[in-house]
Structures are given as C-alpha cells and as structure tokens.
Amino acid sequence: MIGSAMPVNVTQLPTGTQLPSASGSTSGSNTTLTQNDFFHLMTTQLESQDPLNPMNSDQYAAELAQFSTANGVQQLQGTVSSIGQQISSATGLQASSLVGHDVAVSGNLLAYAGSGTAPGAFNLSSAASNVTVTVKDASGAQIATVNLGPLGAGMQNFTWNGSETGGGTAAAGAYTFQVNALDTKGNAITATPFAVLPVAGVTLSGQNGPTVTLAGGLGSVTLNQIYEIY
Image: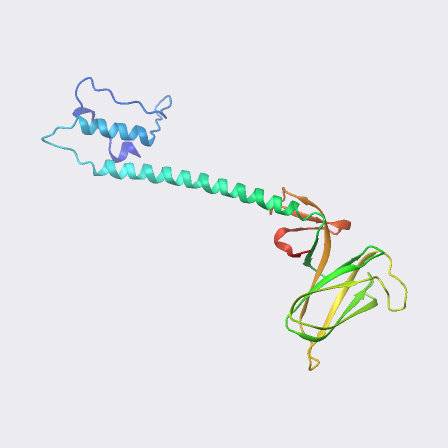
C-alpha cells in the first residue's frame, strides 16, 4: 500500500541519510511496515525536503489515517472477541446452576416417579371459567382427569398425584396430558402445554452453546428452549 501510494523519494535526501528499518521487515523482497515505521519514513523525508520546493504531504496524511483505521479495527476485533468469551463463560455458569431444578420446556410430557406428584404447566391465551387436564398413558388411553376450575390468562402450573380414574395408582413412567379450557360461553381457549422436568446435568461444549440434560433419559435442550425455571 505504501509503495504505490507515496514512495519515498530518495533523490531528495542528503547523501549518507539512513532511513529507519521496518520493524516488521522480513527476508527477501517482502517488507511489512508498521504504523510506527511509516511515521519515521514520513518525518525523514519531510525533514530532508527542499524548503524552496516543499513536498505535498496530503498522501502521507491519508496513508497514516488508513494505518490508524486498520489498527483501530484490529483493537475492536480483539475487544469483541474478549466480550464473546466472557459471555460464553457467564452462560455456562448460568446453565450449571440449573442442575437440581425443574424447567418448563415445550411439550406435554408428564414424568411420574411412582410416588409423589408429577408437575406440568400450560399457558392460557385468555382467562378460562373451567380448566381440566386429561392424563393419557403411552397408548393414548385416558387414565385420569385433573379438575382445576377457573384460571386466569398466562402461565399456569398443576400436579398429578398418579391417581387413576378407576381408583388405582399409575406405575412410574412417562405420560402425556391435554388441557381443555373453556370460557364463560363454552368456547374453547387456546392452551399451550409445557413439560416440567428435572435437570440432571449440563454440557458446556454444545454446538449451539450449553445444553441442559433432562433427568430420566428424556433428552436435552438448549437454554433458549427453556420457558421457565422452578
């Protein structure tokens, strides 16, 4: 860039004048000038110019500005890279803190351990005068109903204690649920289901960032797939 834009005119320099060597020079014909090298070359030529026939320094100033711009871009790239690493570390730390917590992810899965309760969640598009949750087994057969009554719009949570409609208790395993919500006129209200599942571990080296491993071999999700943390 320097050679084509404003070559140093050695014929204007006094005999014996030595030019500063480029700090980034390499062997052979390839020479790389740093901003500091270019500044020394410019000042050397300006000091040696004919006072009665001064040189035009506009091109030198333009070249120096280009050096400054390139240097600024490199510094900005380094800063952005550093910020990216810090964000990645913070994201990994946040993901690690989820182990042992339940998270709501898209789906209608109910994980029942054989005792206690199985949690679930759903989002109502508007307030409902009556809401029921139907629990189904792996074959799709209805085995239980949970009556929740009237609920407001937004995220709602429920639990199923494993009791079946016939009076028995369901075995441990994975079940599904369906939300039926009606308004005061009997019209159906949209209910988006969410599976509430425990976090068993975290993988920090995922292609799309940290991934959260769900307990019971129920798969894994990325952080942006988690809707709510309990």
